[in-house]
Length: 254
Ligand SMILES: Nc1ncnc2c1ncn2[C@@H]1O[C@H](COP(=O)(O)OP(=O)(O)O)[C@@H](O)[C@H]1O
Ligand SMILES: [Mg+2]
Image: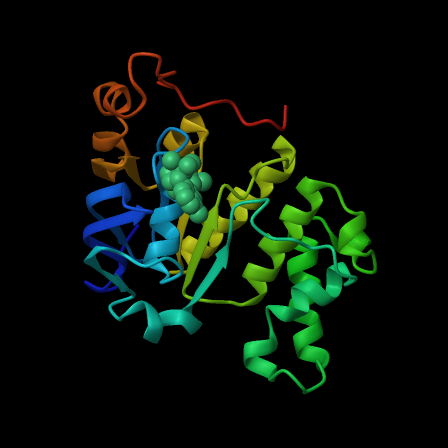
């Protein structure tokens, strides 16, 4: 993790967000370095998804400031690919796997231009990387939840943005595919891209990520994994029931 300069991927300053007068994020400070693989962890309902939505300008904040890659969320829109948490998207309309991933390229080809050969190669590569190439012609409605999730990840990859924001992207995805996609995200990070993922598997966060925000309505801790993902911080976030993963989990490849 060697940020090329001082610009942060994401900077959150005194952010407070409420739904119907009930604060679900309270005075949250957090920052995520550029060129790092970062996780957001915290119990259910701790505001992880809301934090991402507020950062991207999708829900209004009561107070606070957000900077994405050094700019406002509006100006940075085209530099961010976002995969919302599963269930947030209704994909009942008839569209194929390939078409969904092609949507990731529309910004560069324009909505009404045909997707040319080089664009098609990018789409093929992204489908390949998430193991969905054999399903390219399949209607999205015919896929399992985990397969859809892989298609959304492929679409985000196809956008080739500086920052990737993924909200629990591996829900319903088998361990082998999750491991492969995490390896791919690590490669993107090695090439200077910034990645922020809401992820619930603390063992994987410890073994694979560079940076973590531990969140429970407020910021519990934010920083490099070794100093931040401590039993004390996890207990503060999750309570005494915290399952504290001390050791990296073995790779699921066997
Ligand atoms: N659209 C909404 N309207 C009202 N309350 C919401 C809405 N979305 C989330 N909440 C509530 O806000 C809190 C934080 O939710 P969320 O950000 O989804 O947490 P997490 O992603 O950490 O599980 C929860 O109590 C949740 O029930
Ligand atoms: Mg969530």
